[in-house]
Image (cartoon, rainbow, N blue to C red; front, side, top):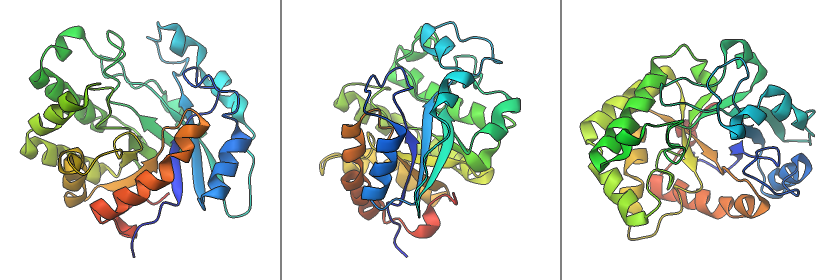
Length: 265
């Protein structure tokens, strides 16, 4: 059967410092699920485990486990599962900022390998000098995660084609085209073997008729290599939530997604 937009596993509340919107509450996020017929949603506020060293930036020293846990208890509604997760971080040394001791605390763990905008913390300046270097670090960071001892059944790779890599759309398209297909296939084959999810992010699904083939190329290849997908609005505000349904339903059509292509939540 054709896939349905029935979940959202990457949502930020007002507890994420980059949200800044008081109305991005757990109650309003639950209402978003009810209004859009979603049966599963997950809060994934930014998180750096206080047990993992390296959170030198104030953005992450604040967003520890006690901070993001303030969202609990999560409100529930009939027919909707409201899960507790996180969007952790990955630094330039390929350290994922969630300790093994915290794995069981989360229903879903989003790992952003493409936070290229947080220079010096997540990527070294020299790794961003050319498109070729960016492609290499894009591939390396995904594969470094795959070498880790993680609960991959509840791990998702966030926004792999985000504007955080290249803010200018034309440069982002050039970046995607520059990723060697054979290396991309091998990487996604490993993702599929591990059982991790590939995120269909609202930002990445905001393609036009003219650039759809390029923007969706990584996801078509991931599908061919057996990867499973999940929807992640990555919404930090109500407007982001509101814009998600149309984009994800269009993505289902363009990628010809079936129920079997989606992660088993």
